[in-house]
Figure (tube, rainbow, N blue to C red):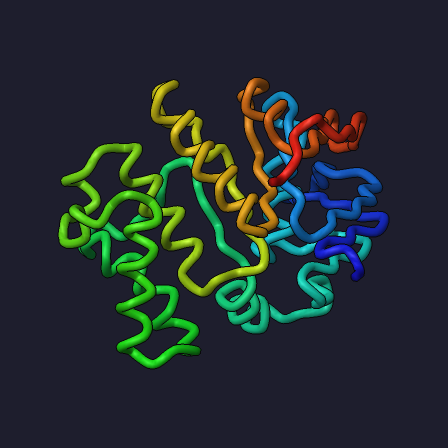
Length: 233
């Protein structure tokens, strides 16, 4: 099978007035289905920009981005929005749950957007995902009524709502205490063992070493790319 992610000679710059600020330089990268990849590097070196390209949140200035069988660099913004809903689960550092919706409603929302399942099946899947992340008893709570770790677990359940091929996470443990961060990371490992492909940006070197592959970004370039001893069982 071809890689689930293929980047070919990707550059990304942001324009501020008359000034072009380069962020990524000639990135070429293949990631196979089932890998758990940690992307590390100091702040401001392009990690989140790279993740945004993989998630179809941003488009390259130059080069090709193929993810889950689609050429993202060729899609319109509307096409990218639909593609994301069907193919990608995104986990953010600050959870990004809608504060006026219950935990259960936040998980239902992506399924309502894509509408690939009947409403009854959506509710069953949402409850299944709540059980998977250990939040069955918090289904009717608002995000503000549960802890940060529980909010991040709800965000992971939401990312899984449409059974995506790929999960991308931007500093998913960066806003959590050490014990809660370890618990969230264990959930990522479980998802990977179940066959999910994960790409995670992190500053936490200990967690990065526990992924199956560690990629280092410096000054917008990949400077190191190594497999770890971690094996999916």
